[in-house]
Every structure is written in structure tokens, then in C-alpha cells.
Image 1 (tube, rainbow, N blue to C red):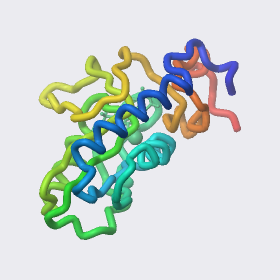
Image 2 (image 1 turned 180 degrees about the vertical axis):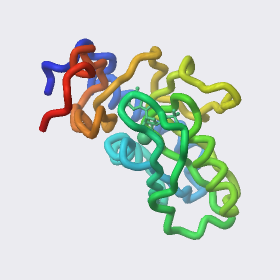
Image 3 (image 1 turned 30 degrees about the vertical axis):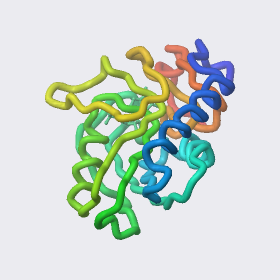
Length: 184
Ligand code: 5GP
Ligand code: MG
């Protein structure tokens, strides 16, 4: 698995240090609000587990599962595969995401959660790829872990065809991995 990585962009230690800082920022803004952290599955799970433990106050956990992506190319169409379970009426919601790229997923998710009557909806993303934003999707995250270049990254929850999510760092795949056929 590690041999498929061309370059490590963010080490495990760098990510953990930044998550601790984000935890402090969120605590300052939401410490007395009992926010609902809505994780967008599946890519967020690794970041999510660390992020909630860096938030040292009451909070509620919830998840949404949307799908839009095939390989390295977005299909552009959004589906809610699994909706949140909590009643969000009047609640302060923070969406947790692995990466903000074209902006389609987060715009869709944010609009969806606002329509459920949340008092506020903010976005916290581990990675932001500003150069990837699609036309008409000038969405910005309120809390950003790291800004990354316009390359396809894997690890720390992010996959390529469902692999590499368990890498403890964020890296760039070697080009030959894309060229190879799927194998188990
Ligand atoms: P967006 O809707 O902003 O284009 O993309 C958001 C989703 O696309 C992310 O949650 C992630 O699943 C996927 N995605 C976007 N860029 C990358 C990337 O560089 N690597 C991986 N593994 N997934 C990405
Ligand atoms: Mg995702």
C-alpha cells in the first residue's frame, strides 16, 4: 500500500497538531452551544473521530451519506444515501468533511441541512483544494485544516476506488496506480 504513494503531503503528526488547533477554534465558537457535528461519509470517518475528541465540550454526533464520486472524476450528481437522524430544528450544525474540492458535495449538504431548520450551518474541512472549485460553486469552508494543491490525494480517510483510507497520512498516488487495472 505505502509503495503506491509518490509523496507524503501531510504527516500524521502535522495532522494531529492541526486538529488540536481546530478543536480550540471550535471550542471558542461552540463551547456553550452543544453543536451537532454532521459527518459526510465515508471519507470523513478518520478526521471525524479525531476532531470530536479535540472538542472538549458537549456535542452531538450525526452522519450523512451522499455519493457523487467515481474514481478521480466527479459525476456531478448528488444522492442522499442516508440522511441525518437528529431533529436539527434550531440546532447549531457543523458539517465535518474530508476535502472541499469542486464544492458540489458541500453546497448540496449545506443546503440540505439548512432546509431541515438548523439555526446555523458551518463547514469544517480537513483539506481544501481551492483550485478545484467548479464554476458557480464559490463555497468556502469556515474552518480549514490544510490547503492542498490541485492533485488527487489519498489517506486519512480519503480513498482511491475504496482503497488507502487507512493510511495514517495524506499523500499523492503514483500515476501508474491510476493506469493499472483494478485488482484486489
Ligand atoms: P467536491 O464535491 O467538493 O468536488 O468533492 C468532495 C468529495 O469528493 C470529497 O468528500 C471526496 O470524497 C472526493 N474528493 C475530492 N477531491 C478528492 C481527492 O483529491 N482525493 C480523494 N480521495 N477524494 C476526493
Ligand atoms: Mg467524501
